[in-house]
Image (cartoon, rainbow, N blue to C red):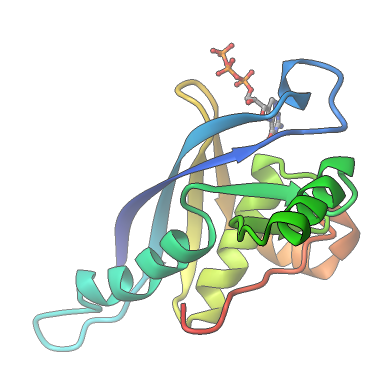
Length: 159
Ligand SMILES: Nc1nc2c(c(=O)[nH]1)N=C([C@H](O)[C@H](O)COP(=O)(O)OP(=O)(O)OP(=O)(O)O)CN2
């Protein structure tokens, strides 16, 4: 059986390597749809709330109203300097690769899998018109060939 759950978060980012509007700092209401493979245990499988209890804090504490940023983006160092100078704590979700929706999907799939859930796939919506379907096969291929993503998934303690 498969349970589908939907989540959302708001975040800023840019694709600094693209020579178009996407290299401007901008924001999205990201949509995340998760397809979980579940097993029946009597009348239930996994309770809907069991997914929410782990995934909502992951998104709230690491992504929501934050900024997805590539370590090689010159803006990253500027933001670190700003934090050091002012003492401000910005929510930066750090990527070792460009913050494309493909790399975001790899990051989210890895983090949710690390929580013990078995995903069949996820869907990541970046804009009203652009959505990425990311399957378990895509994730296995990305894990096998890390040069495809260069992302190291990181989850803060307690999320
Ligand atoms: N394969 C990818 N292509 C693009 C990505 C990406 O992550 N992977 N990202 C972007 C930009 O981040 C951009 O914000 C989204 O692009 P786009 O869909 O073109 O944005 P619009 O909302 O303006 O789309 P319209 O259909 O023109 O309204 C670009 N490409």
